[in-house]
Amino acid sequence: MPQHIKRLIIAFSLFLALFLVLRQVLRPESFGELGHFRAKAIPENAMRPMHYTVTDSCTKCHGGIRSEKDKGFHKNLKCEVCHGPGLKHATYAGQFKNGALPDSLKLYKPGERKDCIICHQLNAARIKIQFDTINTTMIHQIDPVKHNPGDPDTKEAFKCIDCHSPHQP
Image (cartoon, rainbow, N blue to C red):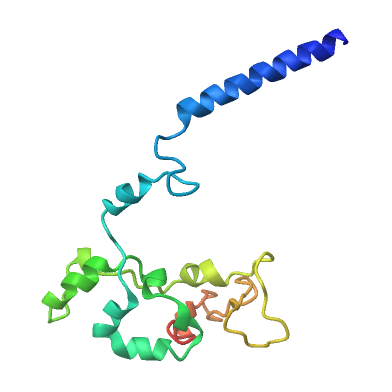
């Protein structure tokens, strides 16, 4: 057998042995007990604080907005997709009947073009709506440069919510 083949076999054997040793040392103790992940991750994640709530919590106070949203293209979106985590808001906002919530309980109220563009920017990797057919499983995409209506005097672009209702675009 040629000398270079013997060296290659020795190098491959050493690499395999090193791999097996490192795998044994670095593999977490509970890996593989409940499938192809670390079983101890379940109680560790359960200990983390919760931040999100369910849409039904929003409906208790904002039922009118929910019914409006359910008629539009955003009906399958959860409120927290746009407004951020709402567990604290849903839990404690009812204590403030006059509507003057402290800043820690206020949710984000998107209104800028950058908020809508997160989902609606033209992206070649996304499925497109072709020939103006409406399919609620697809995201309507726009080119923010071309779809940029603005004030003809100031040349300032309008916000999306100036023309479109965010709950029923």
